[in-house]
Image (cartoon, rainbow, N blue to C red; front, side):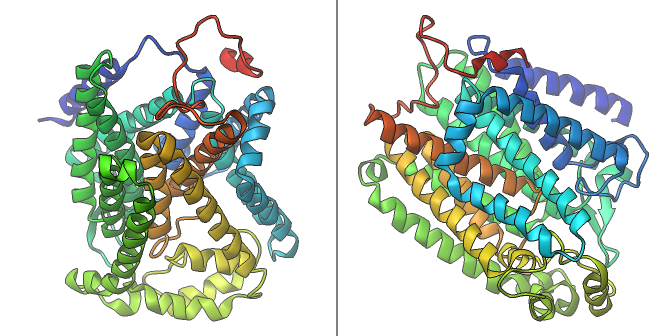
Length: 469
């Protein structure tokens, strides 16, 4: 099929997916388009790259002044939205206080960075990740907003990746530092394609399971077809990308959602702790001790592509074990050049381990705060699961996936899809748990924050005026 015809077919198919998944009964704030646009950019390439203003190899975190202006506009509008929802925003941040402390510490660390101007600019972008997650959680109808976030990002990024891979090889394929061809899709490397596909496919799994379990849901067949198509597309991309870490995390997250949906686990929530412990332990061991075997199977040298040599090189280079080099400041200047001298072909710009990455930039204090975020997110997700197994299973899947993914990839960095969805999961779980304590127990599955309202005469809560955005 000629590329032009394929483009037309894919465009029609994408419009068809949007039409199938549309639910006219529920209206969300137009502000949901802000995180959608943010993830479109973060999950692909800078806008300047799509317009041909910068090289295709540039990432969303770099780009040009043009890209910086786009991020700034999105962040500025997002802050206006959150200010108009200040009551809900404040309550959400209080419920997820470890995140607030972490970002405050990141800002403080700018003071001892060797590159404070760069560190502060990167911290500003990192605030954008938090703001976009908050926009979803504080929406008047958060469950509908979350569903539309998955659909509006997934229906574009995943089919477009398949189109580029199959019909536009110069855009959808690339080469790694060793000259081997890799699948990139709408992104710039296979690992980014893998993690974007993983987080969006987990959302598709949740949507499919939700539709299957709710036999009375209107438009059930249409939504199942749309989400099933998206899931098949995601599975195909995970297979093409050969990103072992993302594939393993997707399998673990899906298994967790399936397991938590079983009645025996729903009746005995304590079994969730054992299940998660087994998954984290097994997944961590697989990532740590299975990595070199995978590299060797691909015919590459573990001296350059294995993670252990990188860890041995960078850990002793941490300027301050307690406080780190400053927010996103380790991979700059002479330290970066020293690492590149040690790995002249691979030339890494991350530690390929989220915990070590945080240690290098923020020291043991940062590692402790990240651990606190994960523990808080897990605890609140389990509390959510006890009231609503469906949404609780999804939140647990993201927390567990981020925990395991970061064993071999830098998953806690700004503008990283897994980090954004981890923030989204922790904030959502925190809001639900906070609502539980303030309102007392509710019937099973009737989450006060996520359940759609059927009472059209109910008073409008503070901040709903943001519907104008």
